[in-house]
Image 1 (cartoon, helix red, strand yellow):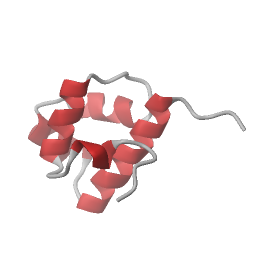
Image 2: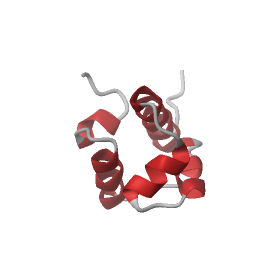
Image 3: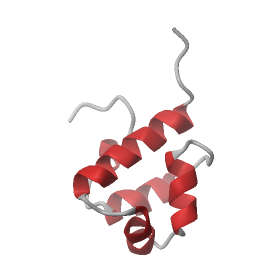
Length: 74
């Protein structure tokens, strides 16, 4: 079985954490200082994010960076 691209796995994980937090893409973008369309593109695996962006997203979601990493154990 071929592994999914890390961008897709990260996007899926980000979406799951965001949904669990009960916030919209627009609200996440606002909290992280990022545009809603950027959040959407990240969740679809269309954008490659920097570690600085991962940190912004984690802070906005009030979680550790590791929570956003695919295949992490909580």
